[in-house]
Figure (tube, rainbow, N blue to C red):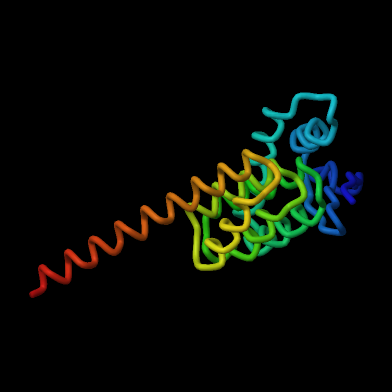
Length: 173
Protein backbone atom coordinates (compact mmCIF):
# COMPACT_ATOMS: atom_id res chain seq x y z
CA UNK A 1 0.00 0.00 0.00
CA UNK A 2 2.92 2.37 0.46
CA UNK A 3 5.44 2.71 -2.32
CA UNK A 4 8.00 5.15 -3.62
CA UNK A 5 8.12 5.78 -7.37
CA UNK A 6 10.72 7.78 -9.24
CA UNK A 7 9.99 10.52 -11.75
CA UNK A 8 13.17 11.30 -13.67
CA UNK A 9 11.38 13.75 -15.98
CA UNK A 10 11.05 16.32 -13.19
CA UNK A 11 14.44 17.28 -11.65
CA UNK A 12 12.76 18.94 -8.65
CA UNK A 13 10.71 15.88 -7.91
CA UNK A 14 13.00 12.97 -7.09
CA UNK A 15 10.23 10.68 -5.99
CA UNK A 16 6.53 10.43 -5.42
CA UNK A 17 5.17 8.83 -2.30
CA UNK A 18 2.15 6.68 -3.06
CA UNK A 19 -0.05 5.83 -0.12
CA UNK A 20 -3.13 4.04 -1.38
CA UNK A 21 -3.01 5.94 -4.66
CA UNK A 22 -2.37 9.30 -3.00
CA UNK A 23 0.56 11.04 -4.66
CA UNK A 24 2.87 13.42 -2.84
CA UNK A 25 5.95 14.71 -4.72
CA UNK A 26 9.09 14.77 -2.62
CA UNK A 27 12.64 16.01 -3.06
CA UNK A 28 15.87 14.09 -2.39
CA UNK A 29 16.13 14.93 1.33
CA UNK A 30 12.50 13.98 1.91
CA UNK A 31 12.99 10.77 -0.04
CA UNK A 32 15.96 9.80 2.13
CA UNK A 33 14.01 10.58 5.31
CA UNK A 34 11.04 8.60 4.05
CA UNK A 35 13.29 5.66 3.22
CA UNK A 36 14.58 5.68 6.81
CA UNK A 37 11.05 5.83 8.18
CA UNK A 38 9.93 2.90 6.05
CA UNK A 39 12.91 0.71 6.95
CA UNK A 40 12.19 -0.89 10.34
CA UNK A 41 15.90 -1.70 10.81
CA UNK A 42 16.85 2.00 10.89
CA UNK A 43 16.31 4.66 13.51
CA UNK A 44 13.52 6.92 12.35
CA UNK A 45 13.23 9.69 14.96
CA UNK A 46 15.20 12.30 13.02
CA UNK A 47 13.69 11.15 9.75
CA UNK A 48 10.15 11.69 11.01
CA UNK A 49 11.12 15.21 12.03
CA UNK A 50 12.53 15.90 8.56
CA UNK A 51 9.38 14.53 6.94
CA UNK A 52 7.16 16.58 9.20
CA UNK A 53 9.01 19.75 8.21
CA UNK A 54 8.91 18.86 4.53
CA UNK A 55 5.23 17.93 4.63
CA UNK A 56 4.41 21.13 6.50
CA UNK A 57 6.04 23.18 3.73
CA UNK A 58 4.22 21.16 1.06
CA UNK A 59 0.85 21.51 2.77
CA UNK A 60 1.29 25.23 3.28
CA UNK A 61 1.61 25.51 -0.49
CA UNK A 62 -1.15 22.94 -1.16
CA UNK A 63 -3.57 23.09 1.80
CA UNK A 64 -6.33 21.17 0.03
CA UNK A 65 -4.04 18.13 -0.17
CA UNK A 66 -3.38 17.88 3.55
CA UNK A 67 -6.64 16.25 4.61
CA UNK A 68 -6.39 13.73 1.76
CA UNK A 69 -2.88 12.83 2.84
CA UNK A 70 -3.94 12.32 6.46
CA UNK A 71 -6.86 10.13 5.38
CA UNK A 72 -4.60 8.05 3.15
CA UNK A 73 -1.90 7.71 5.80
CA UNK A 74 -4.44 6.55 8.42
CA UNK A 75 -5.95 4.06 5.96
CA UNK A 76 -2.50 2.64 5.20
CA UNK A 77 -2.51 0.86 8.56
CA UNK A 78 1.19 0.96 9.42
CA UNK A 79 2.47 2.60 12.57
CA UNK A 80 4.85 4.86 10.69
CA UNK A 81 2.29 6.13 8.19
CA UNK A 82 -0.08 6.64 11.12
CA UNK A 83 2.58 8.66 12.95
CA UNK A 84 2.92 10.95 9.93
CA UNK A 85 -0.85 11.41 9.90
CA UNK A 86 -0.85 12.22 13.61
CA UNK A 87 1.89 14.82 13.16
CA UNK A 88 -0.32 16.63 10.68
CA UNK A 89 -3.45 16.30 12.81
CA UNK A 90 -1.55 17.63 15.83
CA UNK A 91 -0.26 20.55 13.81
CA UNK A 92 -3.69 21.39 12.43
CA UNK A 93 -5.29 20.99 15.88
CA UNK A 94 -8.75 21.58 14.39
CA UNK A 95 -12.26 20.52 15.31
CA UNK A 96 -12.87 20.29 11.55
CA UNK A 97 -10.72 17.15 11.61
CA UNK A 98 -12.83 15.36 14.22
CA UNK A 99 -13.71 12.56 11.78
CA UNK A 100 -9.98 11.92 11.30
CA UNK A 101 -9.33 12.01 15.06
CA UNK A 102 -12.17 9.51 15.54
CA UNK A 103 -10.65 7.22 12.92
CA UNK A 104 -7.18 7.57 14.46
CA UNK A 105 -8.32 6.64 17.98
CA UNK A 106 -9.52 3.30 16.52
CA UNK A 107 -6.39 2.71 14.40
CA UNK A 108 -4.89 -0.77 14.51
CA UNK A 109 -1.56 0.57 15.82
CA UNK A 110 -1.48 1.46 19.52
CA UNK A 111 1.05 4.25 18.96
CA UNK A 112 -1.45 6.03 16.71
CA UNK A 113 -4.32 5.47 19.16
CA UNK A 114 -2.22 6.96 21.97
CA UNK A 115 -1.46 10.12 20.01
CA UNK A 116 -5.08 10.37 18.90
CA UNK A 117 -6.37 10.10 22.45
CA UNK A 118 -3.97 12.79 23.63
CA UNK A 119 -4.91 15.07 20.74
CA UNK A 120 -8.62 14.59 21.29
CA UNK A 121 -8.16 16.03 24.77
CA UNK A 122 -7.31 19.33 23.07
CA UNK A 123 -9.72 19.18 20.13
CA UNK A 124 -13.02 17.78 21.24
CA UNK A 125 -16.76 17.64 20.89
CA UNK A 126 -19.38 15.14 22.07
CA UNK A 127 -18.16 12.53 19.58
CA UNK A 128 -14.64 12.81 21.04
CA UNK A 129 -15.92 12.23 24.55
CA UNK A 130 -17.78 9.10 23.46
CA UNK A 131 -14.76 7.77 21.53
CA UNK A 132 -12.42 8.46 24.46
CA UNK A 133 -14.83 6.74 26.85
CA UNK A 134 -14.66 3.69 24.57
CA UNK A 135 -10.86 3.94 24.41
CA UNK A 136 -10.74 3.54 28.20
CA UNK A 137 -11.40 -0.15 27.46
CA UNK A 138 -8.56 -0.41 24.92
CA UNK A 139 -6.40 -3.55 25.34
CA UNK A 140 -3.27 -1.37 25.47
CA UNK A 141 -2.75 0.20 28.93
CA UNK A 142 -0.99 3.27 27.50
CA UNK A 143 -3.97 3.97 25.23
CA UNK A 144 -6.28 3.60 28.25
CA UNK A 145 -4.14 6.04 30.26
CA UNK A 146 -4.06 8.56 27.39
CA UNK A 147 -7.85 8.32 27.01
CA UNK A 148 -8.38 8.85 30.75
CA UNK A 149 -6.02 11.84 30.78
CA UNK A 150 -7.84 13.36 27.79
CA UNK A 151 -11.21 12.85 29.46
CA UNK A 152 -9.91 14.47 32.65
CA UNK A 153 -8.64 17.42 30.65
CA UNK A 154 -12.01 17.83 28.94
CA UNK A 155 -13.77 17.61 32.31
CA UNK A 156 -11.51 20.30 33.76
CA UNK A 157 -12.10 22.57 30.78
CA UNK A 158 -15.86 22.10 31.00
CA UNK A 159 -15.83 22.80 34.74
CA UNK A 160 -13.79 25.95 34.21
CA UNK A 161 -16.10 27.10 31.42
CA UNK A 162 -19.17 26.56 33.61
CA UNK A 163 -17.56 28.33 36.56
CA UNK A 164 -16.54 31.39 34.54
CA UNK A 165 -19.85 31.56 32.69
CA UNK A 166 -21.66 31.51 36.03
CA UNK A 167 -19.24 34.11 37.39
CA UNK A 168 -19.85 36.39 34.39
CA UNK A 169 -23.61 35.96 34.72
CA UNK A 170 -23.43 37.02 38.39
CA UNK A 171 -21.34 40.03 37.42
CA UNK A 172 -24.08 41.12 35.02
CA UNK A 173 -26.69 41.20 37.81
